[in-house]
Image (cartoon, rainbow, N blue to C red; front, side, top):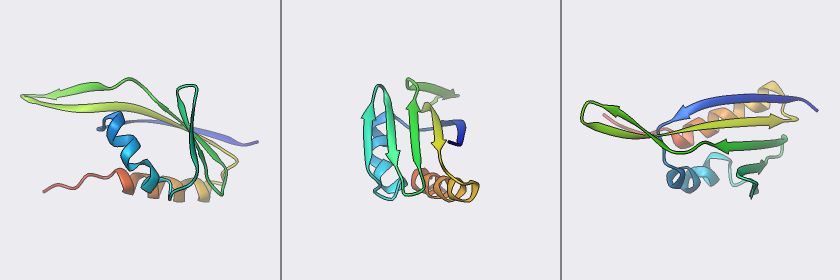
Length: 96
């Protein structure tokens, strides 16, 4: 059973995360177990751990920050890259 773990900080609240999650995982089945989210993708399983929400201050601006760890099980490198591309696109914020 192959595993790969990735941790990143995202400028997002838990509420926003769960609102956007279905689109990020292409509506794959999801369950919550023991403080983590399990995504049952065709390629394998992804466990997602969300740390407590914090704030990042930039001058007078406060932005939400959540550290997120994704743990992939039974994904090929190509499948993991495709999953992450979709995941990142779903959580991308527009601006300008």
